[in-house]
Length: 99
Length: 230
Image 1 (tube, rainbow over the protein chains, first blue to last red):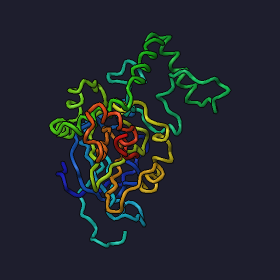
Image 2: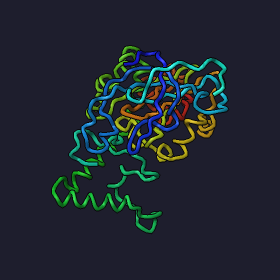
Image 3: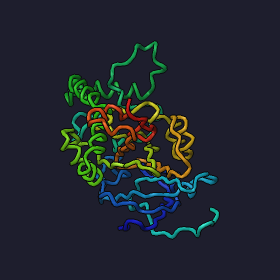
Image 4: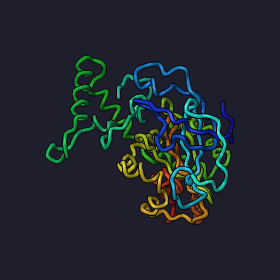
């Protein structure tokens, strides 16, 4: 369980088939905005299975500058809903660290 | 896609909402334009038609059931969302409830959102502007905004608004100052999002009903700003 405000990294799983984690967020670090409850796992639900165990779902906020190289506005952000099994604890790269 | 689902039809199906390209499986059952006006009958059209005919033949549901479900879905329009926004602007207690627990607050307005996906409400304010997209398919708060516009489902909007939101918003006529944080919300999973736009400054004299009339669909997606009273 991740607390609000904690930093998380989206795991770089390779998955064949249905999943709800967009490719452009893999490996990126963001901040947990809120925990929104537990839901059936779409990766198995999509294939007529029960989707259990339930997965916690978090709203995670990323800095746009961390997602796209050369992004022009430092203050802009992006949020996405990410299931817990796609997240690991993380530390933010030092300010000014080119990525 | 089935009437026998345990939830309403006015949303994107998380159990099979993989990318169908430009194709919109929610429109399958609608009456089609004359075939010569149609670009092409895709494999998806044929599959849908075959499935539908088979399910009717097997007695799973009737053609009338499908028609009723389409009518139910089409009765939902952005006017529902506009009522919610106008109420949030004029009633601070409602606004607090709406942000904390959206569906009970909306239900209390007499809008039926039972058996629809979970909803989160995002409030635009001076300095923060939300814009909603579903990059993976076309998730949209159908229960309060109705059927999504075609551009919302287009690959171009979905690909570009996450990467260059300011450019895309400019194309919608939305210019925001540098200091405003643009917060793109990618509705990737089980939540749907409603944006509460900023209330225009010159609307103090308007009552709730008049306010609802100025709330545009796009302002509740985040691709529009409100210009105020007419």
